Amino acid sequence: MNNADSQQHARRTGESTLQPGDVIIVANDTVQPADMRAGLKGWGRLLHCDDQLRIKGELFTGKFDLLLGLSMDDQQRLIMTCPSTADISVFDMNMQAVTTRLPPRRRYGNIISDRNSGFLLGIHSSYGEPLPQDEFGDGKLVQFKPHDGQTTIFDVDVDGGRGNKHFVSNLAIAPDRKTVFYTSEAGRRLLRYDIENQTQLDDFATFEPEEGGTYGVDVNDQGHILIARGSFAEIYDASGKLLQRLEGDGRSGWTRATFCHDQKFYFFSNFLEGVFQRRDVATGEVVSELVTGMRGSLTASVEYFPA
Image 1 (cartoon, one colour):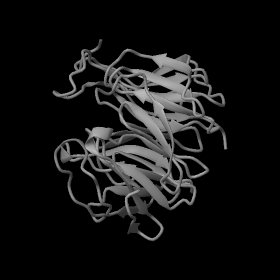
Image 2: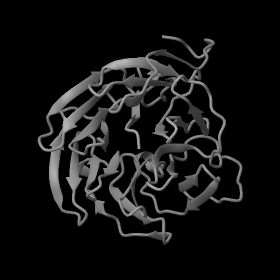
Image 3: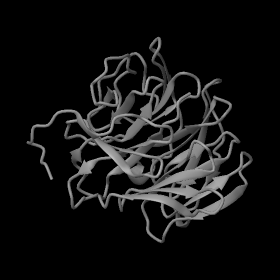
Image 4: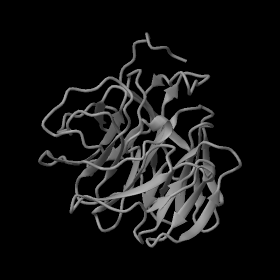
């Protein structure tokens, strides 16, 4: 394990060619044993896997700062967020830094496509020193169009989540391109916001404390909502009817759930155990698995399919 005083540079190992179905996973090289209460530390790292979650290569940022969010643009460039330093990094698949337009500096966490040539980003939490104020204000949800730099910041309601310090920790956008579903990490509410009309909508769901927290969320093309709940996941239809409860494996820490491209499968990852799985939506069966064994490492993923 390298320490913070080591000198590293952005680099990759293994194959760099993307094939349809490949998965890029944020799998930070965290200092072990990971101390969740004292705060996680480690090197920013991604794993490049094939469609069966076999590792094809590793991508290192060269920074002793943990990545949290990940997305990919239409030029196969990786966009990564680091809330602890309020940085966004953009690299190509060979880990060469790319200069491009970026949204205003914030402590961004999750980043997703807005389904309309831009990105949506959530302000992660109140951890860290306050950043200097700018003309954009203090909203916790951001829409950014990289082709012209257009930035819209929305003043949304938040749950607070763990320690009442979390803002928009996880988010997804519905097929209508305007309804954003989001959670505050380990919170109790699944919130919604209309970015077209800039209107806070009624909560989609509110959960009792004994039912588990709210974590990663996704919405498929049918408008079905998938949400990770800590030890299991659930799928709801657009009306709020529970369609499925997808059990984990008895362990806690299942904090990210996203539909795969074909929407017949979903990705499910365990932050506490370092396990990333591809599962069948219909049965919940594990069809492929990556076990890193690294606690406090897995935070985001993106599946590659050319447009």
